[in-house]
Length: 304
Image (cartoon, rainbow, N blue to C red; front, side, top):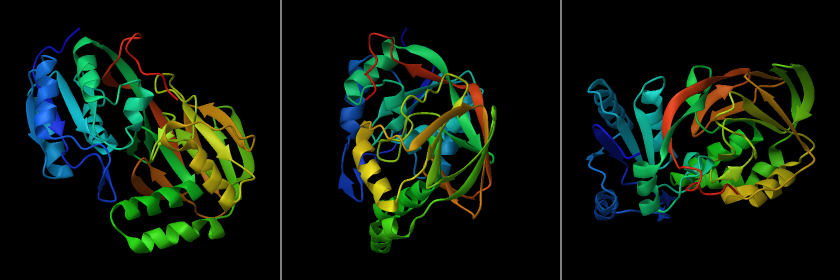
């Protein structure tokens, strides 16, 4: 296919590190070399902040750019995706971050040159995007214990030792509670430690909390974690990190185009990397809202 028209690359040079340690760092020279060797003629832009990056993407859309490439982590992908919802402008992904949950779910290689080649020879496909209380999410919304875990882990990544202390002791204090789920097929009442409402299989450091979730079926996958203790949750997360899969009979699975989650006590909610308050929370799916360049069938990386 090849890229046609004007192309912008939004690069986050800070992508590819966790807690200050490099995990997948890429230099400007390496990035430019990957673009050039694959015949990608594009403007390279470095945003000084989320606001600056958002403003540049908005201007590119207004100026009629045909493709905007997010070169960074899942946060960079989200910045671009938010501005392309319902637009004809395509999102391209060069996965330079640590987890790259969106790229993995779409079968995009983590290798920079292979990902660049996909931009030139792949195909364009529209995918679903989730929405919770007006906030877009590409991966999933975590409710309950997992939202606490990911929230504390995010602060640890930012260098907070207090958050590390709280994270280590979190298994001692989380507990299940009564939740009510209103889905397309009716109402479900149960006790749960946490609920995941997913558009893709992965979140956080590649935790496979919703295996089988797809971003092109017009539905959200709902996973209800029942009967787990705090330590049981810790064991489960250790088994599904970085894309690994682990079946548990204590997880119930549903699908729905709209979800309302209510709880006996307020539970924290987290959409991808953003805290969004507490329950109740309402979630919907925006079907085929985002146009993305993805691999052809013979190029796609198999999902774990």
